[in-house]
Image (cartoon, rainbow, N blue to C red; front, side):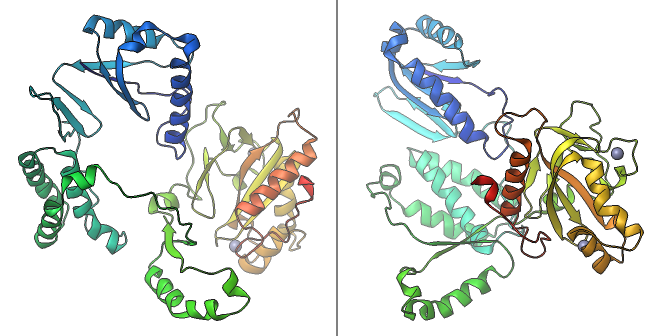
Length: 419
Ligand SMILES: [Zn+2]
Ligand SMILES: [Zn+2]
C-alpha cells in the first residue's frame, strides 16, 4: 500500500521567503530525527517499507493495513513540532510532487507526469526579458522532465503533446519545440533516471555579477583579456582555471516599484513591524512609512521591530532620490538624529555627509532624502552595551551595502566594534 502524507505549513515561516525551504527542511529534518530515534520507537515504524521526503511532502510505502496506516498518521500528529498531516493513500496509484506513481499487476512500479488539475500555464513567456540562452533551454528541459517522469513511451508522447500546446501558448516557435522534442525523445530514459556520473568535485572559480544587457560583452572582455592574467607571474598563481561566469538576478520592476517616495503604507496597526511616521513631529516627512526597505542592491529588507520617529536606538539607511545612500546609527530618538542631517540645510550650512551631498547635488533641498530603519536595538537588549551593538550593526550594514564606495556616502568603515 502506498501512503503519501502532506504537511503544509511550518509555523512562523511564510513560505515564499528566500530561506523558507531551507528552514522547512531543517525543521522537518529535526522532526524526522526524533521520529526515527530508537528511544521513541513505535511498532508502526516496522511497517514502513520506505520513506521519502521532499521538503514537506512525504511518500511512504506501507506494508500494514489501511487501519494501521490511519493509526500511524494519528501517531505522527502527536508531535512536539506542531506539525499537522493530511494523508492520501491507495493500493494502486498515488500522486507525489509531479509524479503519478502506479503499481502494475505484474509488480512493477510505473511513473507518469502528474499535473495538478488547478495548475495554470506558468511557463516563462518566450518574450520575457530573460537571457536568451535561458529562454531557449526551457523547451528542452521541459521535454527532458517528462521523458524522465514517464515510464512508458506512449505516456511520454501524450504528455509531450500537451506540453507542446502549453509551450506554443507561451510564444515558443514550432521549430524550436520540434528540435527540443526530438532531442529529448532520442535519449535513453535509463540514462536519465539512473545516472552513474560521479559528482563534480572540481572547485571552479566563479565570477558572479548582477545580470544586465552587457552580460555577453563582459564575458567577451574577460575572454579576451584572460590570457593577460594567466601570463602575469604574480597573478597567475591565483587564476589557474578560466572562471564560470554566472550572474545573480538584477532588481526587477517589482523591486524598484515597491517603495515609492510618495506611497503611504496602509499598515498602521500599532504592532506592525517596519518604519513608520509618528504622525506628530516635524520630521515625519523624512521618514518612510513602510513595512520593508528596498535596499540599494535591490534586496528587500524586513525589520523585525517597529520603529517610528520617536524610537531610540536605531541603525538607519538614508536614501537619496539620486540613488546615493548613507548608513548611520543613533542611540537618541531617531527624529533627533534625522534633524541633525536636515536642519542645517534650511540655514544653507552643512555638517554631515548627508547634508553635504544634498547641498552639493540637490541645491539644499532636504526632501531629496528619506530615512528607513534597518535595525532597532531596544534599550535593554542583552549582550554587551548598546553603543557596541549599534556600532556593530552599523558596520555590518556599511559592509553589506558597500556604503563606503559611490553612490554610498559613508566615509569610512571600522571593524573596531568587533575587536
Ligand atoms: Zn514623526
Ligand atoms: Zn542625491
